[in-house]
Image (cartoon, rainbow, N blue to C red):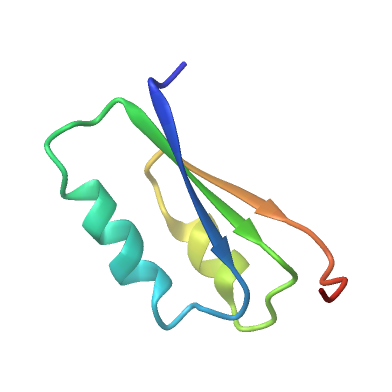
Length: 67
């Protein structure tokens, strides 16, 4: 189990998500997981996440229910 989790909420933010995750992955400390909590994105976020090979990246998708 990782020491801590980094949670990234997202909704149609594929244009910023790769740089965000890359910034986390460049850190020297590595005992963490990255959880992307996706609120129903339709911009290909799920496809991009599924292409990532780092086991520390977790993906949670839910149907967008508004505010």
